Length: 398
Image (tube, rainbow, N blue to C red):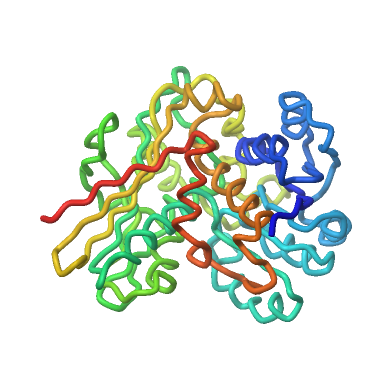
């Protein structure tokens, strides 16, 4: 049953702005609250869309009381902030009787909540009759659903490989990230998790790489194994046993060099250091001086591509199904004034929110803390192209 829902987005950086623009234009959204400690992004969404359903408010997302008051006004809260705030925003949603959605988890080295910390709250959320749909961006999120959509057609699965490429170039910047600097730095600093033969394992950071043959117009690109949610989620929730899962992403050569040097100098440490009587965390300083991702909009040229490769048996034959989506940074800027990385990450959230409004994601039946694989991958993929996010598929029998 279709029903308009009210939604709040906490965190209106580049990704939050993409989600906000989609939802402001959606007839399935009755009210849209845009909240952040810095209101630049929220105001940009309001100005760009001109929607009268938007309300803007200042909020400290780390203050559970403030989150609670906002959650009381809506059916659903989308967390567009950083993973370190996941549990606080989730607690505010529970107290305010609102469901929840986010796009990533954190890492314990940095003192941030991990996937396990969120899943431990499953019973609490189920008892409250609320749903927390987590890791619901592009990767993780869309990448997981690409995997499930392919695996559901197979009798058995051998491996799942998630690959993320960006051919983007950015003049005048030697060291920059296209999405949250904190999240990107954490991802490349940690020894990445992967799954092999029934066990979760780790390999040294930035030491496992390959040239992966992306489809045209991207082509072959060097990708590095990094720490990503898919390597944990897919083995647990794909619905079929498998032998191997990992995630690799393309990284700018300069970015890798800078990270290596900063790490050797101790400037990416999470432990505070004493500087003239003041405690300072080196990692926080580096992340703070990097440009805001939304400040890069219109300056990046190239294509962003997220691909999931699944190998197994289909109709008794060895089969590889590759599913991918791509968009140019120029096209994303034309659509919403933001670059492709943010557009790809935010758009799946908007699709999932609208599926909730259509009753295709039943928050009452689903209640609890749930992974992306909990929703219908076929319907989800059918909706993506409506928001300029094409879905391509290639089936081969090697």
